[in-house]
Length: 214
Image (cartoon, rainbow, N blue to C red; front, side):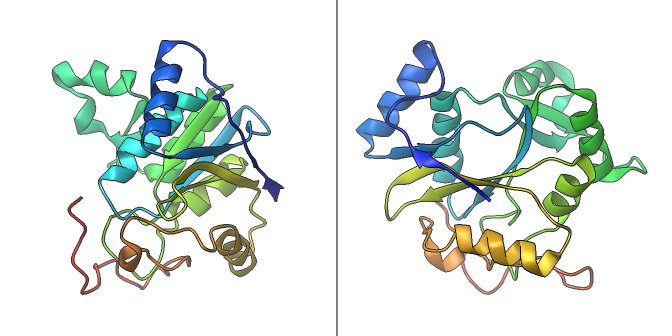
């Protein structure tokens, strides 16, 4: 497990990085960051309990200058908005293909010499019984480390807390990930899902907790 350190200055350069840093500072947020150990990584974001998570994550991305990509269904990239979503870092996924999400994203990692992909393993802002396992299987298939990215509303900190290479032992790996995220508090703590992988037989229906609307 590679730990990260707090930094006062952004990793990005240019006016956009300056704007993002300035907005975070004005809002009272600090960045926690260390450059990735290599040219490829799968960044997982936790916890995801509010619409504000995306805004803060994008500001942190801009401040740090990370070329972070995100995956979306291929229908989003058709027509006049296709170029726009690609410019924002989007990567289309055809879920009708036999290889599925993991296979297609693993191919993206193999094809690109530099590739950082972001995912929210909870998959929703609602409370669930655990995390979707796609990120886990993808990191193993692509042979890339996880960037354990976080949003802590109690401490008002955002960034990358550690880098971690999965061993393939799910129980051991998830316990190590949970230890890194210990004490991290989302905007709506009651909606934070437990850090455990959902089994194939488990459904992902939201629990009886109202989803955050802000």
